[in-house]
Amino acid sequence: MRQITIVGGGQAGLLLAIGLRQQGYRVRLAQNRSADAIRSGKVLSSQCVFATARAEERALGLDLWANSAPAIAGMRLQVAAPDGSGAKAMSFEGLLTGPAHSVDQRLKFPTFMQVFEQKGGSLEICDVGIAELERFAADSDLVVVAAGKAELANLFARDPARSPFDQPMRALALVYVNGMKRHDGPLCVTATLIPGVGELFMIPALTLSGPCDILFFEGIPGGPLDCFDARADVDTQVARVKELIGRFVPWEADRVANITATDANASLVGRFAPAVRHGVGRLPSGDPVLGLADTIALSDPIVGQGANNAIHAAKIYLDAIVARGDAPFDENWMTTTADAAQKRVEASVQWSNMMVLPPPEHAVMLLGKAVGSPTLANRIANGFDEPATILPLFADPAQAAAA
Ligand SMILES: Cc1cc2nc3c(=O)[nH]c(=O)nc-3n(C[C@H](O)[C@H](O)[C@H](O)COP(=O)(O)OP(=O)(O)OC[C@H]3O[C@@H](n4cnc5c(N)ncnc54)[C@H](O)[C@@H]3O)c2cc1C
Image (cartoon, rainbow, N blue to C red):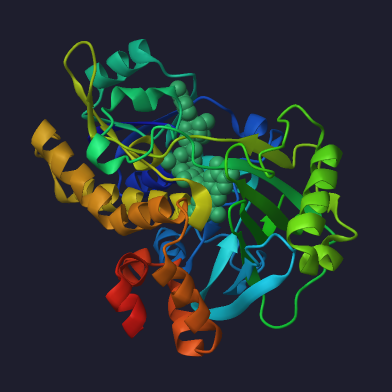
């Protein structure tokens, strides 16, 4: 049976590794952090996964928290008044056709690592560099690099035509909390746009200790939300989040009055530049390796797409590897496979890139229209699941006007 090596045991690498084991491949998963290190480490993401991607996980037997994660039924979109007065300018709620879930990756990844090993996969805990990649390329039929946005992504040439930003477009800061007051109506992600300042996302989630909420600020760099110190302790981060909600989203202050951090590692601060890269990288020996998910299609998390895209891409790679049969995984096949995955997530990448820029007038009008139209509100909500269905509305003033 063919030997596949996957570097990086995150959202995409784990799914692909488990899927390949289910098909009987010999799979080595080389991952730099052990399950224990991930479980006892800092939170990694807000990882809201929508129904389409969840169905792809379910098909692999991996929708393991279907009954324990809070079922997110819709998206509440709000816009703060542009004058900075702290007033709410507009809000609407759209219902999702199927529930979304956010399962703390500190819970998900170690569980998937265990599933992989139970299925006979070989897990190597090692920090992979070029020397290890050369070794893997020599003894494997295929090497897939799914190392997220880490250093190894630089093996894959950045595609300037599809990477409009060479700087981070948002300063990211999130905390996982207990004690949030529920809003009225169906359980939703609440997304608030604060013009000229950034965004706040409130995401019901499941963490190591049970259900919780994630409060996630995306701040325009250099602006008032770009104020989090990565070295500060979690209670300081929670206090800062509360203060910023009181200042910029005061109508939500009551909901966060009694929040506390879920654990000492419940906060994350960072920033990165989005980048689309070529799918095939070349080692010094000349051997090609295939990039997957964030490694070759990294978006700002402003519309929460990366984990969904990682799942879609892993599924495409799994199907392509199986369909290849005994034929070689040559560079042509790698390029075709990576292109198929990039095409699948293209609308999501474009939408993410659009949303980090000041919204054009037609996009603001579109959101305003959704306030009085449940049909449009539902359509926009489900666009988070399949961005291709709403990208034209955000991209084209005529389509926005006709919506
Ligand atoms: C603040 C924030 C909020 C987010 N919110 C959302 C959201 O709400 N919805 C959504 O869909 N997405 C969200 N994302 C994005 C999402 O988490 C990622 O896109 C997704 O996890 C990418 O999957 P991946 O498999 O490509 O990489 P990862 O999940 O990052 O996995 C990469 C793995 O590779 C390992 N690794 C790295 N380097 C090496 C090496 N040299 N050797 C061996 N192993 C290595 C890492 O330890 C890691 O386990 C968010 C991201 C951030 C930062």
